Image (cartoon, rainbow, N blue to C red; front, side, top):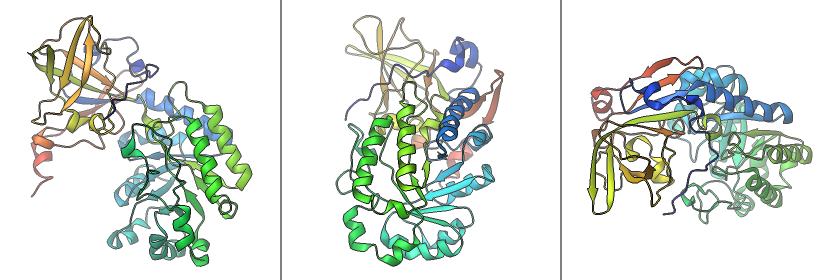
Length: 404
């Protein structure tokens, strides 16, 4: 698998304001997540700027960030939430009240759909068959109905697991599938189309995707009320081409006279959290220096293995021939529970505090208790510098996930 290096421009630790992690977080139990209120607000301001200048609507994709206690920070800047099913839809409706709730699911369940209608405003279907099965009842209850399309335009390298346009993809309706299955009656159910093809990408990839969307579905779009660009837009990353994004939005609006939605998850909480850990043990195997931490890649930052990527670490760099390079691993029995190789100015010792950056996304909403690993506590770094305990976890949180 390809190793994705962290972009140097990511201001992962800007929220520390020059203070050292030990001084800020040394009193906290580890491992623990720390969510950065000021960074969330900064991201919200950037997203709101795009929305205000273009008239598009931007949603929080809860798959990336579901810490609802922080939703009031983001809510003023967003049009609502995006959900992948019943529970996320309910969470968005409850915790961002008065805002829109959009739902896309690969396939909906008969025993959940009626309840889903209580929370969703927009419901997007993956296939014509699902549209035929559930679309009429959704429309009859006043919901805006959409279909996810597959423009068959891959723009990623090294992220195959996240490429919905890969050959044989189960996500989205291709034009061939449209021609085979979409009847005039089904087309009349539709208010909009949805595509989601990007992953941590810039607006040039969106521009390329929109050309493919126009090529394959340009004849359909003038009859739609809205077009959802999906997520994967790295809007709040320094250097992202916001002007090109806004050009894409305006072009779609002008060409097809419709409302444009975006539903980024990562951009909402990019660089807005940390994961604090301490060194439990150090050892050497041949020429490899190893530090075992109280945090696990497999359990607490699963995208490190799934993406894969090397997360940013305060005060550490890429392996070099000088300094002290350590392989950082978790305490689980999984041989591949490796966070990465890092270079330090001095050797690591038992008890040292290590602080990983950009840990608000795909962590707290995605972690697990493999090996009986405790879930890390969650704290909030408030804008005035206060640390607030949000949630702590005990043995019962592990036990009662598995039985009663």
